[in-house]
Image (tube, rainbow, N blue to C red):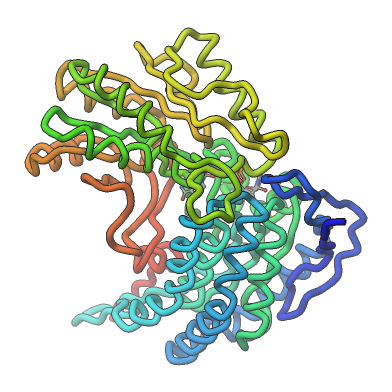
Length: 475
Ligand code: NAD
C-alpha cells in the first residue's frame, strides 16, 4: 500500500491550526497516479484569522530594525537549507518536477534569504536632501497568490522582500502543492519568526484566493499565475485600489539569426522550450527561424528531441517528466489535437498516449511547423512540452513575428553579432531578453512581463520597490 498524507492545517499566527473544513481534494503523484495527499481546503474563518494576525502583527513588525529583519532572513535560510534535499524530493513527487532542474531552482530560492541581507544593506530606505526626506515604507499586509510550477521560488521570492520591507503576509499557495508547502512551513516554523508575519491558508482560487483579493485588510496583492486569473485578480483588487504585482503567462519567442551554428543553438532552443517539461512561464515556445534554414532546423530539432530522456522525474538524467495532473495533461493534449486539426505540420510528438507509459500524465514532446500565426498553438500559452516553429524572410519580419503576441515575458535571441542582438533586444516588447543563453547568468535580475504578461518587476531590489510605498516629507 502506498502512503497518503492528510493535510488539514493552515499556518496562522505562528502555529499550525486545524481547519474546521470538511471539503477536501485528493492529490496524485503525476508520475504513477497514486494518491499522495488529502488536502482540506481552508474556510472563510481561516482566512479571517490569518488576516487578523497579519494586520495585528504589522503594527510591531513594521517597526523592527533592519538588523532584526536580517536575523530573521538568516534563520529562515538556516532552516530551509537543512531540508534542501527533502524539499527537492517532494517537488518531484508532487508535481513531477525533473530533479535536475528543480535542484538549481530550489538552491536559488533558498539563497535569496542570504542575498536579501546584502540588498537590505544597499537599499535606499531613506533619502535626504535640503528640503525633503523621501521614505520607502513597507506597503503593509501583502496577499500572495502563487501557482504550482515552482512553489519554493515563489514562496521565497515573496517572503524575503516582504520581511526586508517590514511587511506581513497572508499566502494562498496553489492547492496542488500541499506537500511542498507543508514541508516548507515546517522549516519556517523552526526559524523563530515573530508570529503573525507569515500566514498561509490552503484553498482554491475561487474561494480563498478571491477572499484574499477582495479583503479590505490587504494592502497589496502579489500574484503569480495565468493571465486569465490575473485579469480577475486585477479587477477584484481594484475595489479597494490595492497595490498590485502581476507575474503572468507567456508565449516567448526564441529567434535564430542566419549567422549562428545551428548544431550549437538547437539544443539551447530545445532547452528553453522544454525546460520543466514545458511547464515554465518563460518557456521559449515559439521558435522563429530564417526561411532559408527551415529544413536544416527541422532535421536538427528531430535529432535533438530524441535525446531528451522522458520518464521518472526523480531520475537525474530525465529532462521531461509528467504534467502536474490529469487536467493539465488533457489541456495540453487538446492543444496538440487543435494544432493537428488546424493543419499545422506535425514534426514530432502528437496527441496519442506515449508508448511505455501506462500510468502517469506524460505528454509526448511535440513540435509543429506553422506556415502562419493564426493557429491556437501559436497564439495561446499551452504550458506543456509543445513548440511551434515559424519562419521569416527578413530580420524586420522576425521582430514583427516575435512581437505578434499578447504576451511579453521573455525572449531569446541567438546570434554572434552583438549589434544585431542588441537591436533585436531593444525592439522586442518583453520584460526579459536573453542573448545566446537558455537561463539567466545572474541569479536575481528583475523579472516580470510587458503587455498581458503582467505588471511590475520582482527580483533583487525590484521586489522591495514593489513592496513599498514612497512617502515624501517636505521641510
Ligand atoms: P492559475 O492562474 O490557474 O492559478 C494561480 C493561482 O491563482 C493558484 O493559487 C490558484 O488557486 C489561484 N486562483 C485561481 N483563480 C483565482 C481567483 N479567481 N482569484 C484568486 N486566486 C485565484 O495558474 P496555474 O495553473 O497555477 O499556473 C500556471 C500559470 O502561471 C501559467 O500561466 C504560467 O505562465 C504562470 N506563471 C507565471 C510566472 C511569472 O513569473 N510570470 C511564474 C510561474 C507561472
